[in-house]
Length: 264
Length: 264
Image: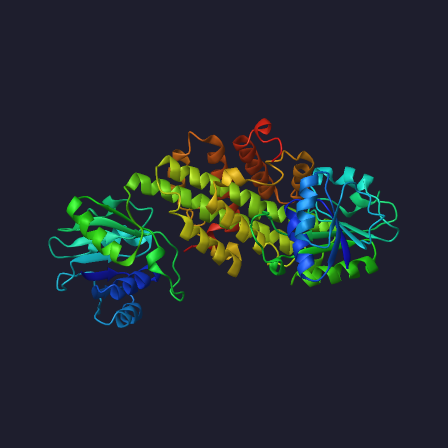
């Protein structure tokens, strides 16, 4: 499939390489930054760096837009493609309809569910790719392309993708914040920050093998009031962490009513 | 070092095996449950299962207590050892002084920082062991034993161990709860529960390589009010999750003031 990339950041970089390695021809790379588009085009051998988002002179049948969410609407409005070209964005939080302004395009979403760093090689085969399109025929083509680079391809509409994004906020963004607080607490006591890493790894591993609610441990699920009171006291100079501790404890206990977990 | 184990659960099981493999002689295993003490004693070859916590007739120089926190005080009060025997418990949340009632003992703490499952083999070498003792001489002996089974041995007093425990509650117990909420959200939309796993793994990996606060992503740190409002609306039928979302967002934003993170 002859493909053009809009963007030359982390996502475009990894996506372009995965497509190239799967035998697709990347014919063009657009980025407003000359060095960026040239660097990625060089990496993809057959690609031509283009200086404007006008792809009508290229042979691209598929245009993948991999740019920051905030720039999506404005780049979409200036994008020019041949009639019938498939144009898909790669964002998890943006709806399909943000591409409605692209004249003559058959629009879709091609969302690889992962965080990318340009310098870090990644096995694209293991990355879920979430697809959406207005028309079945478009979806089928996106499906073929996605399946050639990933082993896990799913059709997910905008509503479900939004729910997935919410789930990711809890599992990744919020979890990351808690790990930050934990590190801060270790640093406050001059404890080595690596000390909890084996335990964290084991916790995550376990949570992937069983429902996390079924393997919940700690003072909250044990209704261990002495320890909870102690912890809240230790957090009294950090009121937001104290509040977090309280609400998290409350939520765990609501999930695990006392009489149902006598020995937890 | 001739050692006796009090308890035959997950911790005693892994600890006993690690000691045995490091060349220590486990001379006795006490558990009130006959089948448990016999099973573990068999596993440790030279150990004798004993039916009461009276170890005065054994050659044990070190007694390690690996039983549930709640049973610790009562078992300690019924424990009998020869004068000068080192008696250490393996609990993260209990103070050293809980062992003060053991007559003639030199008391200590020998806390392996990990969650254990009996059926799952574990590399003890990578598990931090946290030590505490009343006397330097006791500590030195615990240090020698711990170093023979683990590559990471630390002396940590009760105050620091308590702070470590609080940090572990944030990094493990609370994180596990968030992963449970995330899984629930996926299930509510009939999305595969494995979908977020590559992203979670990458998040944890990144949080161990850099300070989590420095790699924070998501709508909170971006001050993306549209997405935040959307998410809170989606959680309106789950008020505790909604409250959690709000407090976590507030805490992330307090950590990352808006004007300091214009492009986060």
